[in-house]
Length: 68
Image: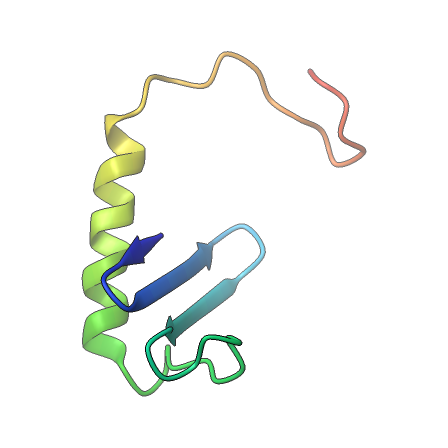
């Protein structure tokens, strides 16, 4: 998710938590999720709200990428 200069990459299933300030780090080399905890939590809350607004998923994928 992008908001202004910030980019959040969050996937709880794979424990991926990344936050970048693209204004000073366009190459996404410095993960700021542990230094900018407040901003990370703010963006994550927005992302969670957006995900909850989506219609339910009609199918699921298995680990080998086959539809259930």
